[in-house]
Image (cartoon, rainbow, N blue to C red; front, side, top):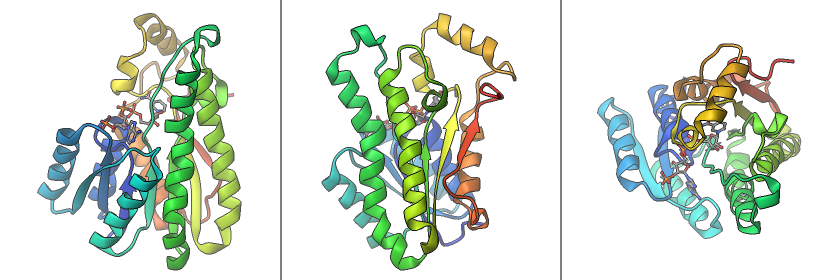
Length: 247
Ligand code: NAP
């Protein structure tokens, strides 16, 4: 389905990004596996892709750093000569109730989870325009739709992603480029490990399916929107939440 295509997945050393890189590679794409610090984990993702006959490249870049992101995009273009898919997945949390939220925590999360999406999307846009083809998918969060206690910074960033993606979707809609958001609920990753047992228990009780999601369940949703066949879907927010946010 993605044979001969090239993808960049940010934050692909662990969690949802890792599963997405593996899924896009399984479907035939060459994948740049971006990470910030986990070099060994990123190398392991590359090795897993190569083991099944795919091609991948690990590339360290802080997604908040414009120069590093430019170098990352150039690395993909030098290696494979085109760029079809960008998955803006890298993200962090720095939770605290607003009364205790420090300006540094606010800025760190807005930079990492929102400004990075602007930086990475801008960095791939000209190539996608020239190709007349592209898929930009950003991993948002249910927190950006419904809010979440202790996450005003994270919810603001994830809501910002939706406005950004819809605005960009309109800008590039006639150039063969689609821009969409996948908004997961609670997914079993290192990020969820950081959530207190009390909140985890509360969350489980609110999810219709009564379980947390698996990274593969988000990865297949990203891959769906990344496919050439998803050509008439843009500006969409696809929730992947086990029925948590059903109206
Ligand atoms: P995770 O397991 O904590 O992994 C985070 C990934 O992001 C790692 O690969 C990390 O790289 C990378 N990263 C962090 N800061 C970066 C930076 N400045 N530059 C480049 N890479 C950076 O996270 P996850 O749970 O898979 O979450 C992935 C995405 O899904 C995030 O956008 C998150 O907000 C969203 N999400 C997660 C959940 C959930 O329940 N897990 C729910 C909703 C949405 P290193 O390994 O090098 O540090």
